[in-house]
Image 1 (cartoon, rainbow, N blue to C red):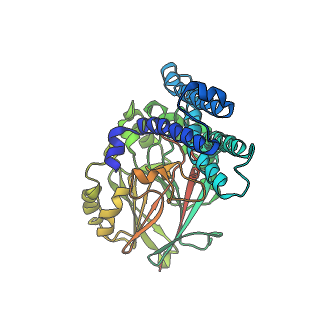
Image 2 (cartoon, helix red, strand yellow):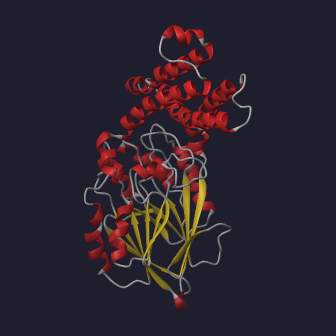
Image 3 (cartoon, one colour):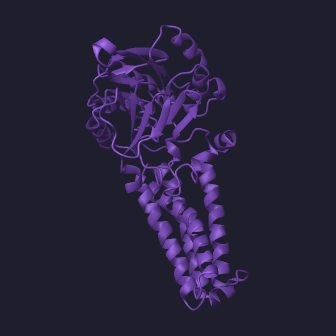
Length: 403
């Protein structure tokens, strides 16, 4: 499925999806309100149905503001266009709920109730769309995991402060048109509030302009970590405009250790019983989807794991595809980003009803294979579609306790 998503393109899939969704809404309205859709005259004789048709046409017209906004570099038009597209997509789902209500709730198919339910469904879709492009994409949460004795679990309560290592993960910052420096500063503040021993930065620091590297690094230098801040490069960092400017800024920054298919070693715990932790940084090849994903990072792992023994090994990779080769080598922990957790999901369903399932195997959260654990962060910023619902931006907190 992933290769077809990449071939067609996310923007095109969304655009065609909206067209299909509007037709679905029209069909749902026809059944719910029992109005004909053959001749224009018939529709005109049914003002309720005609009003819904007009609303759908308006949404379709407004959706083209995305293209106009990009062409004119007017971001507000892009926002309005996307909100219209999302409203159309959402209405197909909420309209189905309205249809079920008419069928299943006694008396709901009488009088003005069907019309009220259908317009309420449209209003809910519009509200959800506004939320996704405002609060949904800016409200950063802390998502917590515990790893101990080769077992990993999401942390449901307060994280034990007596752990051996506390790691915060910031991935997919995407500084650019739709992600501001202030948003990244907030993520840095949240990370600092968690008092991490170590910070892992997993790439895609800018959207498409490497000249923003100075502005980015000015925020990253605020990061606080007892054992250091370690970073890898993502596909956007490799392929963006003025990529080398971004890389130069990261390499000059004394706060960040940029791992370019290389390792760093840190000692944790008391001197008399310290543990050596190896962090292997695997950078992106620059592809959105790596064509040889089954072997992604295998050469780096082979060379770096032979450099010396460590009590605990962490692979920091922008792409979660490093999980397979890492599990083969019994790496303890793989931390990745790239997927944004799908960005769009039915609230409270997590990975179950999530659009990211169309594009990736390792979408969001925790996975295990043998003694190897993978944690995929939902990231801080947004990608092609500047919205989030059901998958908030997150600072990922991982607590490790050694045997």
